[in-house]
Amino acid sequence: MSTRSVSRRYARALFELEQEGVPLREPLAAVASVVVVPEVVALLGKSGVPADLKATVITKSAHNKSKEIERLVTLLCERNKAELLPEISELVESMTRQAASEIEADVVSAVKLDAASKDRIAKALGKAVGRKVKLNVSHDAGILGGLVVQIGDRQLDYSLRTRLQDLKRAMVS
Image: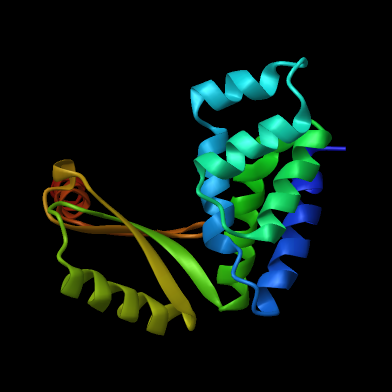
């Protein structure tokens, strides 16, 4: 069985608890970030360390206050699957966005965007796709101006670099 299918089962259970009003996303993200720390990775790899000690290190390092997440971490440590926490956290976030009809869009701009610009772009994209859009914004001076937007498998390239290349091709033809 792949780790993705195992992670999906845990994520689905956590997502259902979250939907019932139990706040789990933040504490889950916190323990997931602890699990990738090199010292913790080394600790998890040691077979002589008891599972309850591993779980305690993870939950205390994350300043976890959720009993549900503490039980999850203990269970995963007992089954030597604590390394699945980042994947589980990612899946819960994805399920939450999907339930809220939210999709992610990667936006590359030539300059750093201010909050108002990001908000206008998110609203325009949301109107175009009919769903709420969460932006992942980065900047690349190489596009010269404009934006490159990736939503799922669709790419919208409104960069100045692409327009200049298109103009160059048109002039050469």
